[in-house]
Length: 311
Image (cartoon, rainbow, N blue to C red; front, side, top):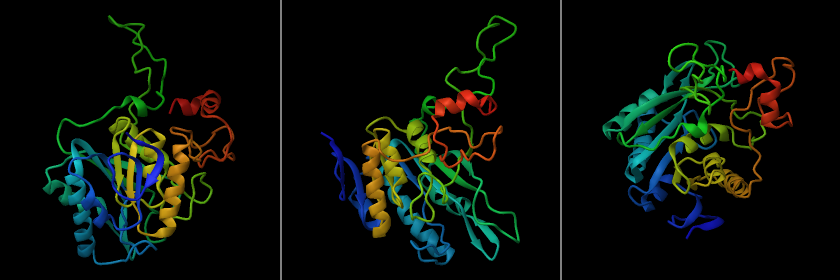
């Protein structure tokens, strides 16, 4: 029987959430084979942030290979791996880390289903190249029999009432009434200072991004794992949607944040930007909708902003 609204530190098949304060390399060895349905993570980018030690790319590759190997081991045969990554930057030269790491997944025979582009509006400004405003999500499966449900993550149709105008189906809706496929380019605000989800973590990713993956690639009560948990976005998004969650964070400050956010998500009290919320109001662009600062329900926004509903 699942332990309701509790978070523990060690692996247990009965836990609702497991957040380990320590190394993912040690913790993952305690997780049984094929017990995880979805791995979602945003690992360090080897750029010298507080939570990482900058090293050579070959050393970085070896560390990433070590944890990816273990994630493949614990992944169910019908499971999914989503590795969200950016670029390594050195003297204005970039090396795309998803391309660097691709051979690790390839050696396991994993199948790449999408290379999702996550685009966002804010970030560090560059002077010797165009400012970076995207990261990628590599979505892999072990085989062809994998979990994927599009319906929970559909977005509003461009023409929601469009109908066939001739032929045997004339007059019928020509689009899915539940919405359209969001595609492989996702325009989701990143977590900066004014974002409703902002914590002290410098590279926090938004719950909306994780929710789209959790809802489409798992069922309720499935286990979701993040080896580089950070501020707890993955575990919070998972328990918020009635999944089991598991993650590792070795910096105590971020571990405590992850613990608190996951507990708040369990009780429905976590502040989060709603899925598919418009980014701005074209009739009043001075009102910031991007970071969830405007206190108005999502349904009201869709009613009042038909242009965005069509997008």
